[in-house]
Amino acid sequence: MVGDFNWNVMEKNLEGLSKRFESTARNIANATSPGYARRNVSFEDQLRDVISAPRRLPLSVTDEGHIPSGPRRVASVHPEEIRIYDEKFRLDGNNIDPEREMSVLSQTRMAHNAMTRFAAKKTALYRLVIGGR
Image (cartoon, rainbow, N blue to C red; front, side, top):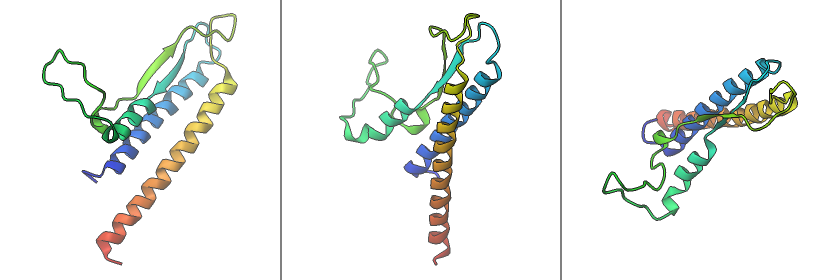
């Protein structure tokens, strides 16, 4: 599906959600580890900037000293895993709240299911076009 913007956005979204699944599972597994810092995956803001970029004035970078105006392509979006140190949930320095992590896991699962349904519909549409029925 090379060249299909929606398909590329869906792939990046699924990649980010997959990394969020991994970090949330790691957080839940280390819920009783003293001093463990919670991890969060961030990618939605970058993806939103790429999607809304056509509506903004494009800025060109003509010198390496110029600051780029943001990611220009979907491929330039990279999910970031961020460690959060400044929150404390327990006295031993661990900041994992199991209820919060289960909530993040549920939200991620719902978003992942929505994206996979979108992929299935998009694939069915491609099959319809290729098959001619």
